[in-house]
Length: 109
Image 1: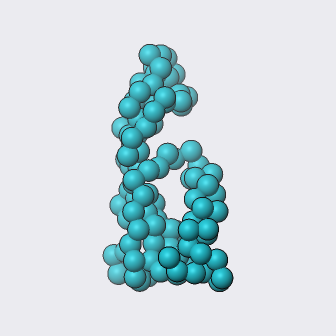
Image 2: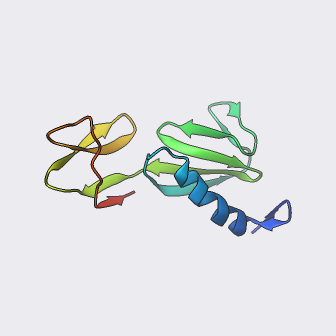
Image 3: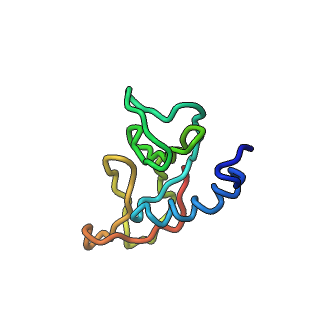
């Protein structure tokens, strides 16, 4: 793998992936893919460190392209909860109070 400012990409990625997940605001993500080359989408170019959306996928630009994450889908949740489709994925809420999120047991993406 290449280097960014003297650090291997795997080391940089290992450091930033947990940070990316923490900053995702509870939006569960999976199905990561890497696009090499110029960091762009729909004729708009992005600089390393910038984030952007490719449809529902959240992307992070770096020196050699971008990493994107597709939304995950919940596969199991408590009986007192239900899965709801959102614009870009799913959320799990309580049946009795759909304004309150419920924690799913597992996700796939």
